[in-house]
Length: 456
Image (cartoon, rainbow, N blue to C red):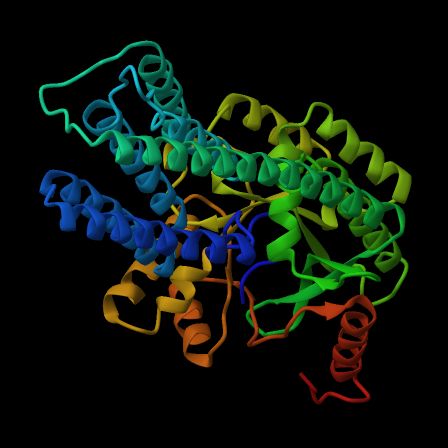
């Protein structure tokens, strides 16, 4: 099961809507088609050097299409931009040198490429993307301000050159207008998403569900709180969709605060019920939430407000949180630990953190990344790797919880390796709070002296 809590899911996700992916895919085919048309035109004239450039356009369009089809959208867009920049510059130096009769216009496409790059950067920020935008703008300024002829200039008939000038200007201007429209639509979409998510908080559209966690005897020892969004207008919105949106929009601090308070409220209610007092509740904390100023004070105030037992609360962090500002993270975790809270390291084994540094952190529990769990029964090599990961956790003095357990074979292997706590579909899917509490009550009746049999 892909995780759907306060962090991006482990399965591959994209910052692009399906509609945008389809638009890029078929746009690349249209681009290749235009190149093919020009290749045919210039082949009939016999200008084979120009035909070669047109084939480069065709190859670029088809390559991007194939990359997108195979799921490499981000790389495909970067590669397409780099290729288009090179093509636009070559056109400006070889085919579109300004004359007294016709100005250079091919450099207008560089503005289109820069605008597309900006759209891409808004969805997935990266230094290569910024570099390509900068190259586009510098190349545009140079080509717009200097004649820059080359020895390989192809001289075209005035009629063809004039028609090409008008056609390229109209096409580039139309594409630039489309990019501006897309930018405006993106800003509107972000604003609407932000308003929808904030409204969901105010209107109590979010809900916590509980996935059981069990011990060696498979008795339920606690649960992990997972976030769900039930929108009256949009229906049930997948966390795969709204969690990345909330991260990008800077709303995870507010949403995470709601989850923390709701989780503590549940713990406070459990503390009043026999059979529930010893249950733990794990709550995920995003990097932005942990690093927010005053997070430790917020946790303290929430515990005081709800009267929750801090010793029953587990805060889960991913290893990626430890990549930067480790000293600050260390100080924050010690402050949380001093409140009595258990600190759990999620997705352990994915390789982000230094083992020597982990020894200094106030961590009591690690959750073995599900990739190790699910591959443990597939081969001897995978099983050996899972065993080593569990052993590292035990050597560091942590309780080891294996998540994503789906088969009896996986359970047996992980028990043999040293895991003492488990979570996964084998023990139960995420349940509404009322259903989870009924599960606990059923287990309690099964353990009572009057009914020693178990029902789990």
